Length: 165
Length: 170
Image (cartoon, rainbow over all chains, first blue to last red; front, top):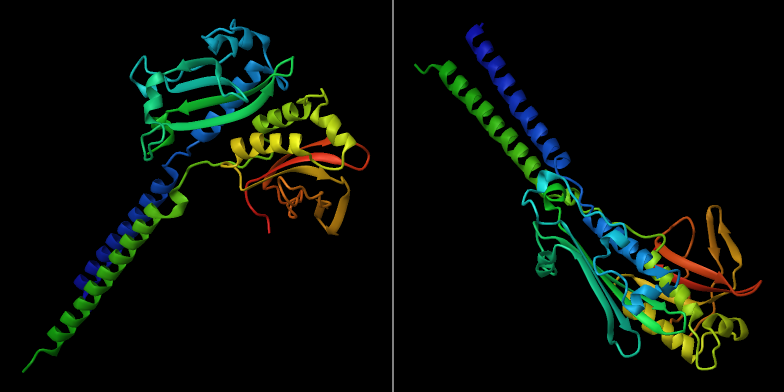
């Protein structure tokens, strides 16, 4: 009877058990530790919100066409770009939105406005972790006199700290 | 005289050693696969069942008037199908603006009758072919919602419909 051998085997089994348990814990943390990236949905919601703000049903607001729609439209459209302190960088915003209104036939620009951190725009089109999500959508609209317009809204959401790991 | 016990002990030790190596290798492979697998893609893509932006374009298109001040809606009520004005305009609006986002786009007149295919599978009957968007997609069923749509009634038998498909159902 090799009692010393039995003790060694017992220690060995505990070591193997510990290694397997550690691997399982690592795999679970690796999967559940990654956050969901909801920025595309967030950018889409922002575009819908701005579109709702500059139009009344299928018609562009008169104030947009007459030029009295405020360029600082965050207040007009009830947009709140404030974020938690987690992002650091103090004054740098996590959002940017830009609106263009063109004549549908001549493609001439009639109105433009932007709000948020303009520096985010240069990162559009770049792929990889750490870059913001850019989404651009267009829609067709009219004015009360039958004029036709194409509206383009660009929405950019950064927030990489909370959505990407 | 050989000590057979020593050879046995060495053999058994090597067995344990190899078994340990195999266990550790399997663990490494498991961890590696779990960290690079497609389930780690946490990009929350979403499919639309309604598209607010496209709906805006649809209603604006219906209200657009031609040179005779006849709106697209009135034209569709009076005529059997899309014409050069409203069909061409629809192509300019929907194909150009949403063609890159959606799998398939269809604008046209449907007859508005529900057809029973089988239990839980209802579909709106096939629409009228037009030269601008072709045939209405056949797999538009409520129980497989892979599309956004908007529909406006023209009369008791017909509707004008916008369908934006994100993927095939069948």
